[in-house]
Amino acid sequence: MTETTINQGLEGVVVAETKLSMVDGERGELVIVGYPVAELALNATFEETVGLLWSAAGMPPLSFTGRDVPANVIQILRDHPTLDLLTAVQAVLPLVASSPGEILANIPTIVAASWRLRHGREPIAPDERLGHAANYLYMLSGQVPSPERVRALETYLNTVIDHGLNASTFTARVITSTGSDLVSAIVGAIGALKGPLHGGAPGPALDMVFEIGDASRAEGYLRRKIESGEKLMGFGHRVYKVRDPRADVLAAAAARLLHDDPLYALAKNVELTALRLLEEYKPGRRLQTNVEFYTALLLHGLGLEVPLFTPTFALSRAAGWIAHCFEQRARNRIMRPQSVYVGPVRNLATTSP
Ligand SMILES: CC(C)(COP(=O)(O)OP(=O)(O)OC[C@H]1O[C@@H](n2cnc3c(N)ncnc32)[C@H](O)[C@@H]1OP(=O)(O)O)[C@@H](O)C(=O)NCCC(=O)NCCS
Image (tube, helix red, strand yellow):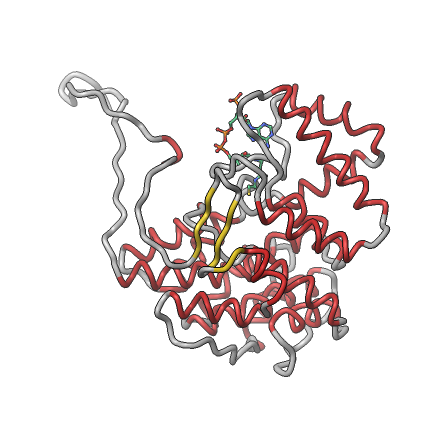
């Protein structure tokens, strides 16, 4: 019998060509539709970035009409106030959206309405005069945000919009490869994004900084975590073996937003201590700061609470998922890897089922 190599985690397996983004893990580079991430993140509006991405995927131009979610759908959210925010999106998105523009327009409305309802507040209707990022902050708080806050959120949204064949994007492509519909691919991708090893990391990363509370406690706390076998959230990456370029973009944006808030200095200290200890305990694994560590600080600086972190990630990454679905459709072959059966082979005549 020939020996089969099992590629756990599909590491290094290439299953698609893409014009959307290029991740170079050895050089620490991320290029989105031809632009270095820092350039695009700091200068483009979110709408412009989506436009570039969707045009690269051969899609029609972006139109953000229909941010309003109908009252009967809001009622479903009202009836289930304890659903986590992304489960709420998964539950109702297929009721209100099927086209790319509808999906992108409705996710923030569902997130903001669910968030307000779970805090006993009425949802705020979208303001079609505001840009995508500004409208999201407005629907959460009821305040039209300052240009600085909008810029900070757009920098974040642009930074995380697409990132090669990460787990959620791959999920979207797998679902699309079966001929299934767009919104099913997005609902599936949200399921993959939620996990703490993917998009669920920034909440725990911020909790960790808060629990440490003071730089003098960082080393002891982090040693205990690593020694008990826990992963430090916000560190390590399957592809990046040097610093994640998105971490620098977001660290600079967080520094601008937090000004001289001692939290920023504490987070810097925690980061440096974590990197030193990861090198000590896991030599040669090349564990570096990833995007989630500074995502947490930036979103906190914007006044968003932890349960909003992953949903905010999703409302940007959805644009990337959609573009990948179109690329997949344009050159499709159903995704169908294999497994090796390692269970017993029984005979019904001699064993009872
Ligand atoms: C991102 C992540 C899932 C990548 O996983 P992966 O490519 O499968 O990496 P591995 O699990 O093979 O890690 C290699 C080694 O480094 C260790 N390691 C990886 N990330 C670590 C972390 N954040 N903290 C402590 N140790 C870590 C692993 O335990 C493993 O150690 P071992 O060789 O002694 O078994 C992983 O680094 C992680 O869980 N990070 C924390 C969660 C996070 O921040 N996710 C957001 C990613 S953008």
